[in-house]
Image (cartoon, rainbow, N blue to C red; front, side):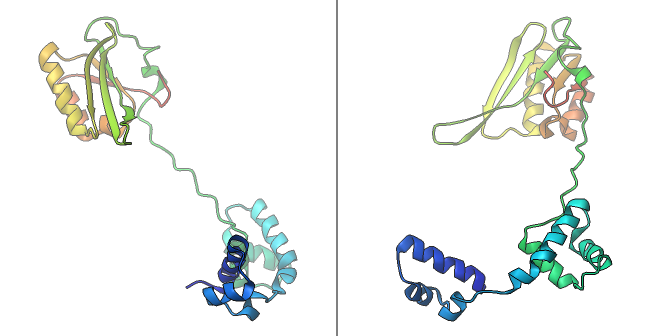
Length: 215
């Protein structure tokens, strides 16, 4: 259900865009003309309170509207929670979300600049590259590289490549040329999935997880 304020905005928008009269716009949108022309007096009375709410919200960003209500009462404002909540929402205030700590498995020491490949099949690396077709369909590329020879061992492309597909592709290459000592990747879900980690461990390989942005 749309409230009077929203309808008032819709009537004004219809007048501006369509060039229609107020009476016709009100009739079309079901808004009484008396409601459309009503001028609220609450804004002037709430001006000082809004200023105080904003000041406290800046000083105590994690207080929330209930905490702000307690601070206002300490300062002598005769307010209840409902009124503060209404003004809090009206001003678009909210408690900032806590940044979620991302669990990182990688480190920059595992990057290609610090731990270089010394021989063939010493270190393989793989990562995903994204592209799309002319019609906008997503393509997912998986290049696998021998870092010592710079040879591209595989270049797979599909609309979707899962962790199971990663294991299947690696299995095929290992059968052809043997397993590497290390395999380097970032912390993408397809590379740290249980199935991939279990298969790598089974083949006697070791993982080199790198931080985001590490070469």
